[in-house]
Length: 176
Image (cartoon, rainbow, N blue to C red):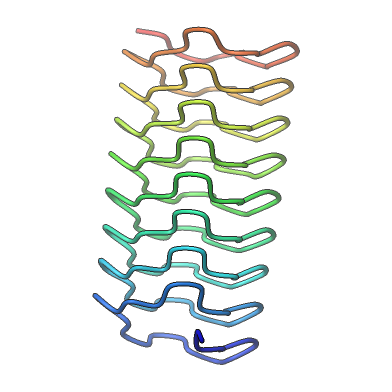
C-alpha cells in the first residue's frame, strides 16, 4: 500500500530520489519542496501546492494532478506521460526537455513557462493558456490545441504537425 500525505504541510521538505508509486498527496502543501528525481508514478495529487518546488527529473507518469498549483516550479527533464493535469496553474514553470506526451492539460495555464525542447505529442490541451511561453524546439505533433492561447509565445523550431487547433489564438507569437 502507498503512503498517504493528504492535506499534509510539507513545505520545503526533501523527497529527492524517493520512490513513491501511487502516493496520495491530495491537497498537500509542498511549496519549495525538493522532489528531484523522485518517482511519483500514478500519484494522486489533486489540488497539491508545488509552487517553487524543485522537481528536475521527476517521474509523474499517469499521475492525477487536477487543480494543482505548480507555478514557478523547476521540472527540467520531467516525465509526465499520460498525467492528468487539467485546470492547473503552471505559470512560470520550467519544463525544458520534459516529456508530456498524451498529457491532459485542458484549461491549464502555463503563462511565461519555459518549454524549450519539451514533448507534447498527442497532448490534450483544449483551452489551455500558453501565453508568452518559450516553446522553442517543442514537439506538439498531433496535439489537441482547440481554443488554446499562444499569444506572444516563442515557437521557433517547434513542431506543430497534425495538430487540431481550431480557434487557437497565435496573435503576437514568434515562429522564427
